[in-house]
Length: 209
Image (cartoon, rainbow, N blue to C red; front, side, top):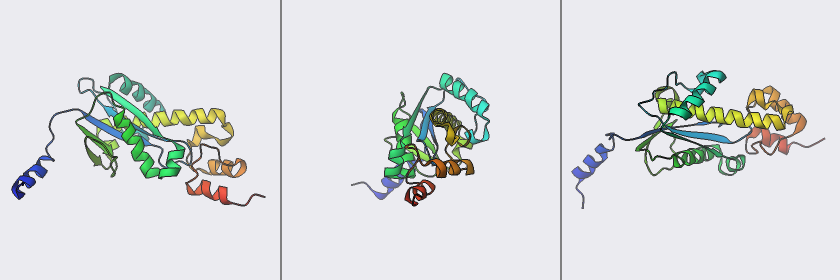
């Protein structure tokens, strides 16, 4: 039977970081009324630094697109995954986001020694992980993940716009803007709309004239 002293020492060792591959994880698309939630995991290469990494929300679209290509070219490995609208409605947005994050980590070609996740919640992983509030502005690997996730999701919404231009997805990217809500009232929801989100649910329950 282990002594209390041994247990204390064992727990203390958990705070010590051994050398190894570090993955950053972030998501895009928790708040919108339409489209999947997208997560990315990135392991950067210390020998190939990438300048100007930052929280994707602080960058222009042109900067994000440029950095997206550079991250894909220079990172040791990266992985992008999704949770579908159906999964969001079935599981709830938090659980669907954690699912997308887990899929992104599992999709990495190399297994990381440790995973740093933006925010205050962790997906279920089989490696050490730590949540970092504001990590997309503090940890370069998380910044890179935020850029991959954001650009990927924006491209998906651009494709949705090409199929349904009357909703204006190219401008609002699925968020509940006045333009989007007006289109929803006039045209009704698409299969890509999240039925569990209140503005869409209210429209579905409203009596039709």
